Each structure stands twice: as structure tokens, then as C-alpha cells.
Amino acid sequence: MGDLTLSQAEFHRLAEYIYLKTGIRFEPGKEYYVAKRVEKRMRELDFTGFGRYFNYLRFQPSGAEIELLVNSLTVNETYFFREYSQLKCFAEEVVPLLTRDLGGGRLKVWSAGCSTGEEPYTLAIILLEMLADTGITFEVHGTDINTNVLRAAERACYGDRAVKDVPEDYLRKYFRREGDGYLVLPVVKKNVRLYRLNLNDGSTMDGMRGFHAIFCRNVLIYFDDCSRREVALRFYRSLEPGGFIFLGHSESMSRITPIFKLRRFKEAIIYQK
Amino acid sequence: MDEVFELIKRYAASGNLKEIFSLIAETRDPVIREAAYVQAIKTGGTEAVESFISLLYSSEAHLRNLAVEALQELGTGYIDRLEKLLCDPDPDIRIISFNILAGVRNETAAGPVRRYLEGIVAAGVTDQENVLAAALECMGELGGPEDAALLDKVKELIEGGDGHPYLRYALQQAREKLWAI
Ligand SMILES: C[S@@+](CC[C@H](N)C(=O)[O-])C[C@H]1O[C@@H](n2cnc3c(N)ncnc32)[C@H](O)[C@@H]1O
Image (cartoon, rainbow over all chains, first blue to last red; front, side, top):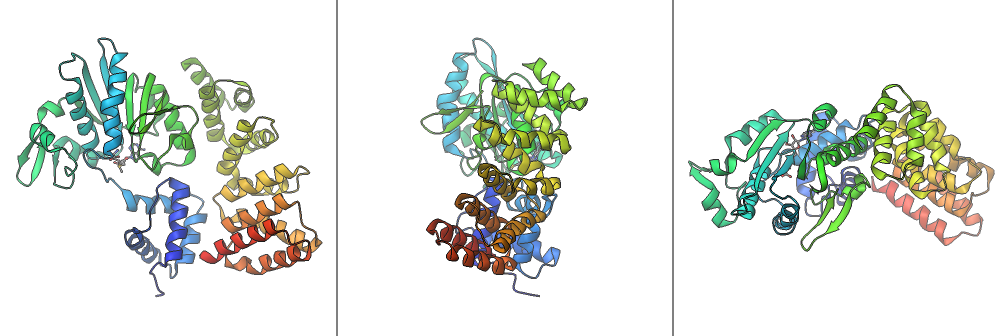
């Protein structure tokens, strides 16, 4: 067997390619993390050198290998209060805007690709805090294609790593210790509806209407260009006029589609219908 | 808005690409254009490819850009057709076509670029600077170490001419990329 370790130059070339294809950037310093997974794939496929594997990755018509590799690099990774500054922007700048125009209605927020539930519960906590005493009600929809992660979301019991960014007072207020873990309290859970939904399924997506904000963070990276555009178009239809869409920080809506307006806030740039 | 979406879906279901492309070209509403574009890509096929190729000649930049993206996506099965564009009399079309090929995710996309470079080496005359630079950039994206000899010949050709620094730079960039793997 040849040498399967990645050189600096090989890492750069690969990182640049992954960025081009998916928008995910692996900065220098991530070499070890990336190399381990690439080397595993090379062993599984019996490639003896990086050059050959890289050609296979680039020229395989189905694009399945790049998807597999990227999956193995990201998978269902998520945690509470991920991308804090974006959430701060949602809480302090976007929610007041949305509720101002809402009248007496109900705020509808969607976490699309919610994985094990940290994101929809985070959104529910934020809305409980921001809407207390306003008389405005809300609902958070958490959807995912993977039923295993949805079951975990239903259990709503999390380890230390998942809650590491939860502010101390929220941890006390909205969680209960249970054994080694943290259980999300019913006051949060009752505002969150979890169900399976495939973002590529047109007819189910057509039923998703009336949302004021959609969070689809670190999900579209798994899609090819055309399905990404199609999903973005469906999100557009799911949003109320003036509604907002939040992507992960390595993702850019303007690279996907020109249909959303870009809005600059103090803490973040958000796309709006 | 919903009616237009339904209409586009019906056009697509009945294979009516003509209507879909007139929407793409004529609508002022970016959301409708986007919906029509997505359906055109999903429908695919020769007629869609030819219609997108016609859009490459549009005077509107956003339509040209849309066509480039579409042909990168659909181009895999139409490499021969894209190769013909490399001989288009309009140098801008030749440049755009190299950009398209560079973004097509398929091993065969390198073929036309090699043949183009072999062609100019054989003829002993370079194409316009910008076109050749685009070809070299494309080679850097798609080629492999096996293209070293070809690039050496292109180098001789460039040096034999006035050895334009911009072309030297493009060549150097391409070589570095090929050597990186
Ligand atoms: C990395 S997680 C993102 C979790 C969370 N949004 C965050 O940013 O922390 C990606 C999730 O997208 C889901 N996903 C991938 N493709 C999907 C699809 N076609 N429809 C719905 N969910 C999908 C995966 O199952 C996975 O749970």
C-alpha cells in the first residue's frame, strides 16, 4: 500500500475543491481532521495515492463521492445557540421587526434540517424570552429527513457538548439535569412541532406556508446546485412577504439564487423576501 | 404568483420548453425567471441545452450568466456540443465556453480543451490573448500531470510570439495547478 498521508499542497487543493463545490471552508489547521477522513475513504476504495482519489472525486459523474466525503466531514453536527451572533441578530433586530408588523397574529418559525433538535429548541427559548409579556404567541416547526435524529429531538436530552454555548441563566431556566444530561423543559418543548420532511419533496413543501422566519443552516451544503435553487424557491413561497431566511455562516444565498433581498443588520447579514 | 408557478409546472409537464424559455427571457420578475429556470434545468435534454446556448448570445448579462450556470449543470452529456462553441467566430463566446467547460463536473470536459490547445500548437498560431488565457485557466482546472508536455509546447508557441506576460502568467498558473495534484 502506498503512502496515504496528505501533504500540505494536497490538503490545499482538496480544501479549495470542497469549498468550490459545497461552500464549506476547511481552514489550515483542520488538516488532521480532514486528512483522517480522506485517508479512510481512500482505504475503503483501495486508492494508493491522493492524486488518483482526487481525480475520482472530481470526475465521478454522479458526484456521490464528494457528497459522501462531505457528509463524513459534517454529518448531523449541531448544538444549542450555534452561531451566536446570528441568533442575537434574530432576537434583537429581526423579531422586533416581525412582531411590529404582525398585529395580534402568531409568529411562525421553521428550523429546516433541525437534526437532533438543538436548533428548534434554541429558537423556542429565544422567542419565549423576546415575546414574554407581549401577548404574541409563536410556534416553531422542526423538520428533518432523518427519523433517527427526530427521535433524539423528541427525547430532548443532551450532553455537555450540546449545551456548552447556552447562557448560564437559560440553562437553569429551561433545562433540568437528568443523570449526566440536560433535559429540555416542557415550557420550551410545547412550542416546538417536530416532523419528518424531505426538502426535495415538492408536494410536501407546497404545504409549508405562512412562515415569518426560516432557519436552514448547514443543510443545503448537501444539495446539488439545481436542487438548492429549487429548495430556495420553495422557501420563498413558504415565507410571508418580508419574512427572513437564515443560512449557515459558510453559506451564501446570493450564490444560490438572486431572488432574496440582502439586509444588513448590526450583527449579521440576513436574506429577506 | 401561485398561478404562474402552476403554469410553469404545467408547461414542464407537457414538455413545453418554448414557453418556459420565453418566460426566462421576457419576464421582469426575478422570482418567475428563477422558477422557469429551475424547471428548464430539471427538464434538461437537447432542446434545453440549445435554448441555453442561444441565451449565451443575449445582450443581457444576467441571461448570459444564467446560461453559463445552466450549461455547467447540463453540459456533462453535451461535451461535443460545447466543443463546437470553442470555434465560434465571437471570441467572447469562446471565452465563455472555456468557463463553462471548467465548471462541468466530468472527466471528458478536458478533451475539448486539450484538442483546442493541440490545434493551436499544430497550426503554430495563438488565438486571441484572452481566449488562450481562458483555455489555459480551464486546463489548470481540468487537466492532470499528463498534460505537461502539451503545456510545454504551448509555452514554446507563446515564447515564439511576443511572449506576452499575461499569457506567461496564465501558463504558469495552469502548470502550478496541475502539479499540485
Ligand atoms: C449539519 S445538520 C444541521 C443542523 C442544524 N440546522 C444546525 O445548523 O446546527 C444537517 C441536517 O440536514 C438534514 N438533511 C439533509 N438533507 C435533507 C433533506 N433533503 N431534507 C431534510 N433534511 C435534510 C440532515 O438529516 C441533518 O440532520
